[in-house]
Image 1 (cartoon, rainbow, N blue to C red):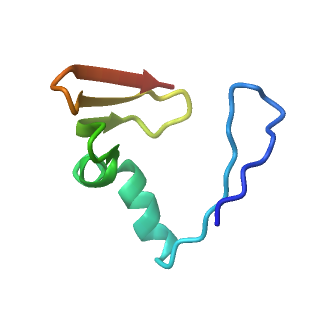
Image 2 (cartoon, helix red, strand yellow; image 1 turned 45 degrees about the vertical axis):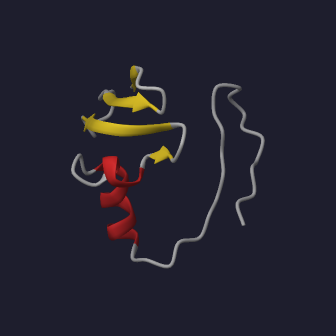
Length: 78
């Protein structure tokens, strides 16, 4: 079970989970533009339709999707 922790930075959330898969496979599922839209979302709320990421330090990421009521959205970060 995930155990949230207080982070020193108030803009961060730390959580730890255990996944029964090789770490390389988990990493690819988190960063591969083909894989992220397959799992990122919540049924009945939203789904991810496109994911992009520059995995270098300072790189940016972007997720594009649609809410359950048909509204488009985009979120991004660095």
